[in-house]
Length: 172
Length: 356
Image 1 (cartoon, chains in turn cyan, brown):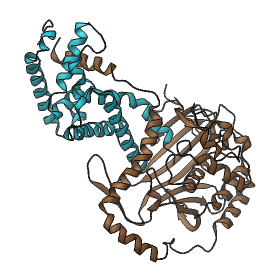
Image 2: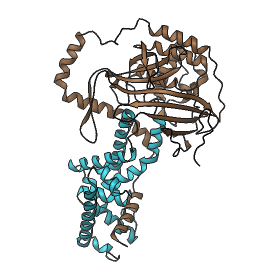
Image 3: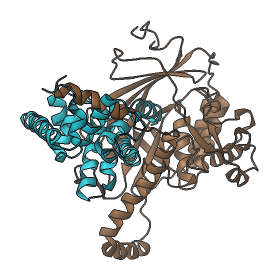
Image 4: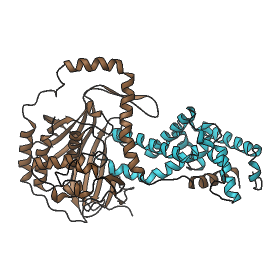
């Protein structure tokens, strides 16, 4: 009954990616790893008890984004804006890089569902149907949330002071 | 650049900053062990008043026993099985052959029964895994390894070193172990005695530290030893080792005999049974594991996890949960094949190969 090798393979394959997803959602490395670890513990429990979930990767993502939401709800996210205030944290003077960090920080100020939809769509490259499965919402809602998220992002970038740093870039 | 493209770009760049620290699997194992306890504690909290009463009652009642109290004890069954298997001949696998196993699994949760095929290279360095006879996605992979804090290999089953081993944990990479015989489990198989008492002592020592135990979970040393021997019986062993494993199994406290037990494939056999845990801590309080052997040849047929009392397990992320009923079969398995073959993805008597 050892599904260990299988799960270790899964862990090795997906751990890093889940950490990155957690990081994009929280902006905090420690929380990111916490979310990834938690998601994998829960995936494992399910794996062990009722075999591999049909799509373990989706399951792990689902747990991760849901846990992220509970974190937000409990307002345990002081570190959420960590990188917003320090866009140059790694000493990069590359303007392009800075723009990217500002944009990323702006996504983290979106309502949770919009933020999650954007990260799953533009980072994880998931289809609307897959995002719908991860978030447990209808596919039509995914489309709406993505549209609203992008619109809001556009507005917020136009009005934030940091917007100046991205103004040299061409915008749609 | 459109906003969508900018966003993709931003995510890519930001993700680069996500620090992934080493030792993740090790932390994962510790967290997982902890997690089981937290769930148990949370459930316990909600039921504390009820439980308090229930525990009092339980103490006054006779311990729950298997239906149809066994007339044969575990040692007798182990003797018969050991005698039978010791007379069978097992070819010695060569390092670049592959151990092929095919298991049928019927599991709680409404999944269809499924089969799980694995090829593990005899030297333990590579493996392939496939579900439901589907080789399309079968790939030869390196056996994953993680750094763990464990006693150095020579301290495990130097026997007599128990207790000592705990103090000299060292960070080390789990070594690759062969897929056959005791070498799959013991870092120093030559030092493992093949008399039942010595073997059991060695197994206890091996699983003493849950973080270093070759199997995951387990509520205590006896539980882990029982679970581990169940796994040991599923690979290729020299006959005298298998005989000793049966005898050692029967010596674990709490092991009794089932006269009739049925594996996932519907094959009737005879079985050992004992309270046993599944992944999370404390589950041996509501589960038992049957290890089922063929009635005549005493080869390993399969195993079943059976719920021994009603239990509610909270689920995540739905917030709902699963109710397990006493007598329910949680997982049932049948080993449909155990063989040594010459290539990965090759089934015995067939010439199948892995997709390139």
